[in-house]
Length: 215
Image (cartoon, rainbow, N blue to C red; front, side, top):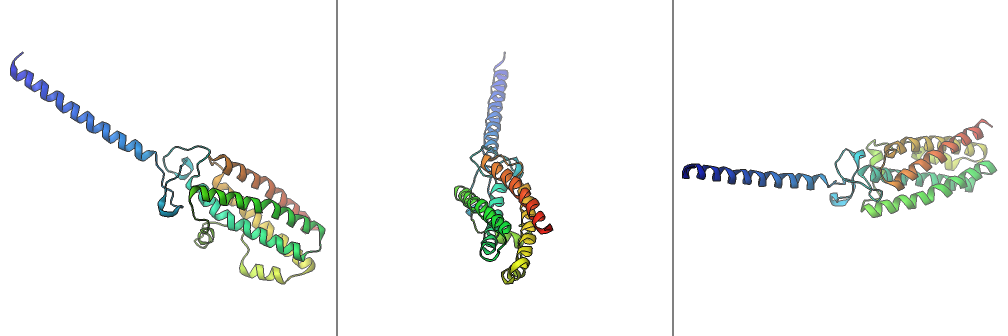
């Protein structure tokens, strides 16, 4: 083999090694980026674990909260809080034993759920005060009673109060059932468990309230 041939083969080999090195570096960079999910719901766009629900690539396990999980908590906390506040009003106003028992049941269920969802936001480093703003942008805190409806409820007494409370809470619960759909496929075990509990309890309470109204 001539010296010129040896030179050409050596040059080709070096170029192939250079190309392979660049390709490997690019592949490593792509894999590193794929492993991160930017959570737009957290301050400064901090990174938390993602899942397939939010349309972003990333690994996920039961301890992580996706962007959708975070948004759900941010919206459901003020939604639950209104149910607790309204039920407190019912406990102070109604004289109907069935309504009083229902109001206490709703409060006892939803107050701890608020604490649970608040702990999720703390773990994710997310703002817990974004829910009302999301509703103003039409992002779906369904069934929330308006300021006028709350004013009318506070002014009512007797059966008028009971009727307004039950009608308002039915719509409120129906809104919650719609909101829960956003995390129906969550890969986080805590979020999944709470969403299923909300569907079970509030579906039963809607049926109970409709029965009370029929009386």
